[in-house]
Length: 116
Length: 111
Image 1 (cartoon, one colour):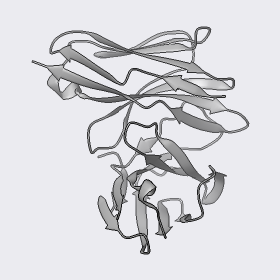
Image 2 (cartoon, rainbow over the protein chains, first blue to last red; image 1 turned 180 degrees about the horizontal axis):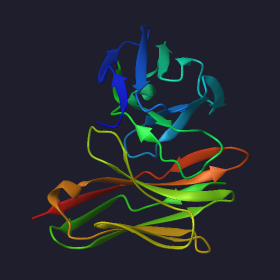
Image 3 (cartoon, rainbow over the protein chains, first blue to last red; image 1 turned 90 degrees about the vertical axis):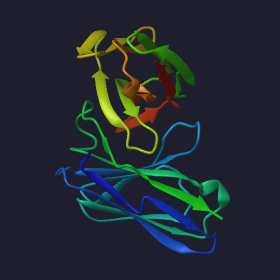
Image 4 (cartoon, rainbow over the protein chains, first blue to last red; image 1 turned 90 degrees about the horizontal axis):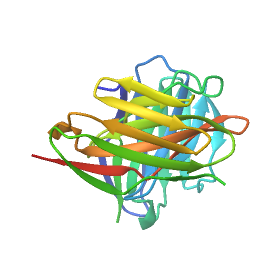
């Protein structure tokens, strides 16, 4: 139990569907992150939220739309995805984002996304 | 640019010692992390180095040489449960802090 919960664990969707991934952290952290993990590739940072404000958008296509309604919850809204978007999507949180470099990020177990 | 390299796969025997190397090239280096990730699970934090030298934490130790852009993770008294991917990541500080990950080293521990 890492304190970061992601739902659903698995998602299969067609290219025309709209779905959302949910992340919730119970650690009292102020920063939350979305990462994409493809097979045999490094984790790629997608979005960073600090105190509910988006502070990083790492050149992610607009078919991925994040939302952070409060510091404990983070969503990733998906629409008209492509087959190459099939991957493991990981959410993470840390105490703060920019000020302290030695704070580890705590990850959820991820959502395994498959695009048909 | 930012580049980080680690071996793709390694195998070792239960009870042995294994060293997983990681090299990086970057400006704006601000610390190095190691994470462990079992298949289908979350990456979990193992260690953090920002100064040169060895940090020991039980069976796991991590070493950093900033001048060489080099780190290693040392696992002693290997157990079967240590079979996992080990992710090297450095903190890039270019106005903000951002973790840059390597592709991970998949370690298989055999009896």
